[in-house]
Every structure is written in structure tokens, then in C-alpha cells.
Length: 154
Image 1 (tube, helix red, strand yellow):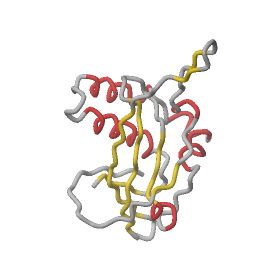
Image 2: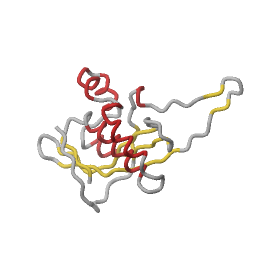
Image 3: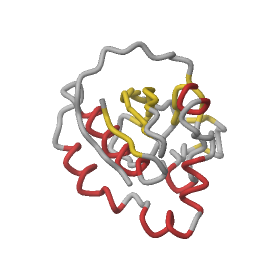
Image 4: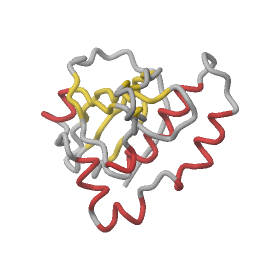
């Protein structure tokens, strides 16, 4: 079940992040010139979204998700992190996204194409005017399916 709502929150959250495994299909693939062995320089943008998890016992855990994405129009992630408290108190593991994606229900409900309209809408926003936040929210919509507890954007 997924509940998404927007609200301002000023609660203090531990900003220690834990890296989350990204399913291969969502990972950014750098191009490398095999003749010169030079790897391209990648421009990225990072966006942090404050979230609240509510477990089946009604316990609330407030944390953050940090999405690092290429600043171009590609639909991929360079890095994905959650605050440590979402792992320790919220029951998430560093492999929750990858594990869900590899499951049968994840294969059928989690895809880039499921959010293609969202990502295309973000392309219409100029860089520096909220485009990164828009892309992070599209990624959140994909990621939220992998979190087995109620989740809200703060």
C-alpha cells in the first residue's frame, strides 16, 4: 500500500546515508572509449526527498532519500541512498529496491516505462527551475512500489 502526500516538515533527521543497490536496468551506464580508455565526465544532480514511513504497528520513521541522476535526459540513476534511520528503524535493507525488482511482482509493476509520462513532463522544465526535483519525484514513484509499508513525501 502506498500513500503519497506533500507537506512541509522541519523535523531533524540524521543525515547519515546508506547506499541502496539499484537494479541493473535502472543503473546509469557510462560510455567508455575503448581506444583511449578515457571515461566520459558525467554531470549529475542530486535531490533529497524527505519521507515518512509508517509500519504495520503505526510507528512513524522520518528519513530522507537521495537520488543522484545524470543531468541529461537519460532515465537512469547514478546513485541511490536512504538515511541510516530508514534502515535501522524503518526496516529497509540496502537491497530492498533490487530485491523487489527481481521478484515476480516487481518485474510486472516496476519499470521505466510505467513512469515515462512523468519523466517526459520533467523534460519540459528548464534546468535550474525544478527539473531535478521533478525527476526525483518520478524515481520516488517507482521506488515507492518496492517499500512494503505506507510512505509519504513530506
